[in-house]
Length: 407
Image 1 (cartoon, rainbow, N blue to C red):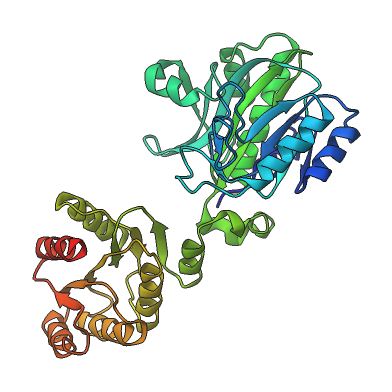
Image 2 (image 1 turned 90 degrees about the vertical axis):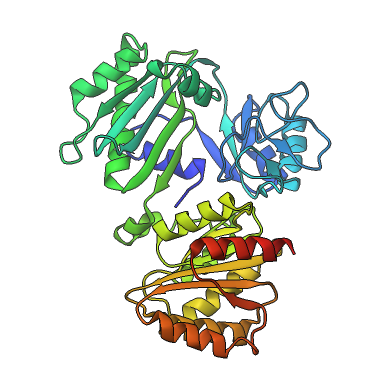
């Protein structure tokens, strides 16, 4: 689960991190009021959307270049004048923000964070907590070169990135925080300030079952203060039952409606950009299915795992979600019958076809317990469901669905 920047900063501040003053607004008038409340001093308007690269993004349809170009406007803008605050806030709230992570449609901006910018940033560094799967431990990762180009640094000069494993029971130790603060180039009073922010970052990650907690940039300001200028926090969905306070922070307007619908039905669904819908039981089998579709010249429209116990209700809802995507030109059903026997799956698929109606070709590949009985059930329903056909194996299924979707 993702949250907004302002929410991440609130969580960090509650654990002792220094963050800039900011006000969340949803109208241009509220943005101007925040500017006035800050004494008419410079502010930064920041779009509150669940995507990275906001500063380099583009407001689709505004006629303005991307934010990193001359005269450009994206999702982050430094402003000095009251009239500019009103104008820019209105544009941000009117046009969707397109970044490398949103796709061509962009993301509707519904909230802005107005941040007081009384001092300039002197230097930017990077800090994050993540689960290092190579060593099986949470790790604190820092880099003395932060900001919008951190991805470039990671790709071209990975030796500049420093990782420090953190014991999940003992937490970040003082000597570790101090070592990392020095590695980031902080000196004098700055070291203690940086340590406090690193401790806040690690505590948040461990206390709230985060999958990622990031500060980029962690900045040294011109007045000598060290502050978490930006924050990004993602949480492990499977642990949200332990954190009702975090679950309340969820903003469903930022999420894909089909993915939300699938989650409520107990399905694991991720929307992709292809034309072939996938209905599979098991994450590994789903990945293999998408790979073989690619291998035979197709492109998956989704990842959809219905789980080990496929029910008629689950299959029906899965087809409704898949067929609700207008890009889908064919569907591949790939089920390995184990806990859910193949004949029960076949009955569920036939029921789904009757209730939903297959408007595109559906290729079914079943294997496992009671597969012969399942094939008899599907064969008997062939006349009733002419858009459905069976496959002997996964290769056969992939070839058939790719050909059918193109036809």
